[in-house]
Length: 515
Image (cartoon, rainbow, N blue to C red):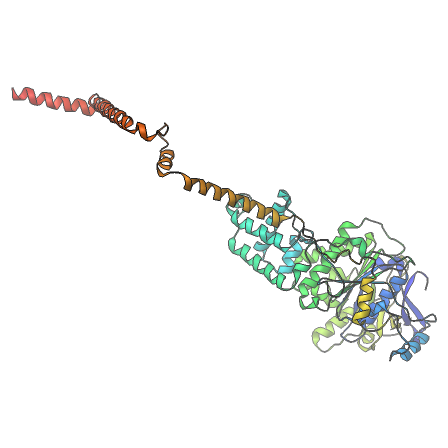
């Protein structure tokens, strides 16, 4: 299909080809359906189609199944006969097994190239979301980021942020005059959250070299778009870390890429699997941020596709921006499920041949209700579609093949060695060491002083210099004379004062009275 990604066959006898128009692929999309209905295969065949059309793809492999994109399918596979029959039924005449260019990524560096960002790039909003901070704690985190920016202290990894928070606590009195109360207990709570992140492996996420966005937007010499696969099976043990990382990546694309309007095909397609994790208990500020990114990033040539079980998992304002939809079966076991099913059906442009709500409930595995944007971005009429079979391997790669793909990657060796340049941790450590050295030197100097010298220095109302032992006797005499003179002057001063006059009058009065 020229200018389209072939999705499957719809209409009567599934003979009508259904495709996603590349020109409108940056208008975002949705892949939804209950567990076991075929969402992962749909994601796989869309990734194949975009790659073949020269569009790079980024997706997360939650179950480990999508690594098979790097290898061609096989006619010895148990579903080979079923795949061939389906391809014939939907008119997929040029169906053949094939592999696709894949780059593997892994936050932990075990199953792919390490992928990192810096603490500064992540920012206080996403970090607050990641650590589930209160409003007061988020405020302190914002203060810390502001100070680091003003002082020129790079925040690269977690130890930089931890050191900065210690400094904020030590200087909280001065900071309170400018920013308001800085609570030690709040700083302690943030430090404990950072400790939890360390235990979850986040130390490997933060650092340098940070991810270069151009490395996930590569095409091969033959024009195929590279498929970037993030290993997420282990990462899903920390769902907030998973969701926050993908949101950060999406935000970086939004902030860094230039405007290109409506291109003939996207510059990148981004699949956000398990999208419900992004919005669970998310503060309004974060949801607003996602909505803004989804609304504006399409003009930068990026299409975002949310993959989730139920369309109800996506906030309504964001759901309304998802123009291309593949809806697998939904189960309606509860009243809430039935309401969600009805609402999902109401978002489609009706087809007079069938009831949309019933179709969503009844479609089988590998079948879906689809609606793609047509000319001028108008939603297409909903259709029951048999999803085409994948050309790549269905299922995960073996460990040796995966390792070979990683070693042959065009970015092999670029991110493997972590760098630790001078940043906030080193700067604050140097300052603390310098202050400690100065204090120690002053203390040593004080201890070296003789007791008499220390007392002499402390008596600030006197002036003079120390003398040698040989002149001490003459000094004692001069001191005695000086003391006598001082006493005489003091007595004369008192006698010339009011008290002295009273004393003189008393003495004279007594003498005259005696006479």
